[in-house]
Image (cartoon, rainbow, N blue to C red; front, top):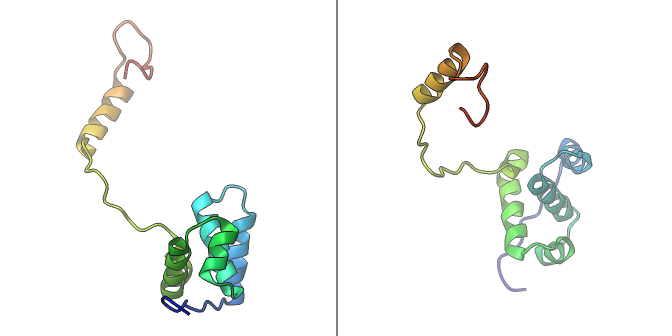
Length: 117
């Protein structure tokens, strides 16, 4: 056997119920349902390589979610915060636009449209 040994995943009844419920939800995010599938297959005793081939992910991705679930359980399946680009509009500017929109009307119109805003 080469590489790092896989973390063994054992699920409680509540965890398995939650993961399976997420797969049945019609409006669940695709990323969350993929992660739930990965964890369920890990709990079934499959190797990361087998899961990756079955679900169409890389072994690295399967290993990542296996480790995150083992460390953080259900909470580990959600996306981590990413800083991203800093905001260019302040809260004060947003409040000012909202106030002007609600308290005034545009020239030559009875109400604001998306274009006139």
